[in-house]
Length: 330
Image (cartoon, rainbow, N blue to C red; front, side, top):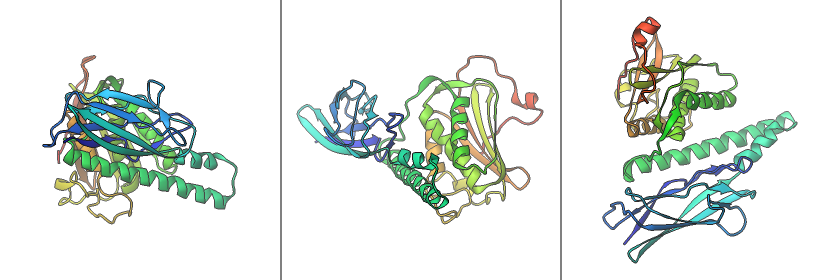
């Protein structure tokens, strides 16, 4: 008996205009829930309506699972039709089969963005803003629930490290996106040169977006974001002002269903999974994440990742005149 577990791609919103989509990833497991390497997996897009094609230009893609039992539908691009997309997935190994369906959506968010850019009345502008924020929130909640399931049932959150990934560019893109989403927020970014490593850029963007987004929503005043190198590690720090995190919350802040304020009803949006997922992503990269919070310095989340040794790094303590970053790992 085979089992098919959807690792990534369920609930994704695909961008018709840019022709970008979340590549589905599945894991084939045996009856004991152990990964099955060498299984044949076929992904099939709908033949009509909202659909797309894979890297081979076809609506059907067949791949073999790797040593972790995973198969990736690479190069997925949506077609020009808006709506729900149901991707059929079939697995076969030694005469045993399994089937599942991955559901995605084409272009809902982009249609609202076009209206946002159009010359519409103030009443319609508010309505469009509600559509955009609602779509973002729905996509974020679905993705967080899926990541929670991956972290607890599928052997952890999957990452696809890409050598030469520039952490500064990843964080800059996250800052640009959040600045557009929160035009009144003041986000100051400082990048200490090119700092690269074998990291998953999409997953690190998720970490950066979560930490910076939390600082914007839960903090006050300017949000300071920095990317630096400390020896063999890349350091991402996000600092915001406002009331410090309660001392009794800090030890469990990276647990599921917690928030920086320690209050699950705070701001009413989200499930309190962002920091838990961020910690799991950082751990999957062999890194560490921590937080320190005080009335004097505000709240600082710090991430340390193993970096490429492209050039000798200065001692941050002497280079900046202060102490090197330290992590209170939760």
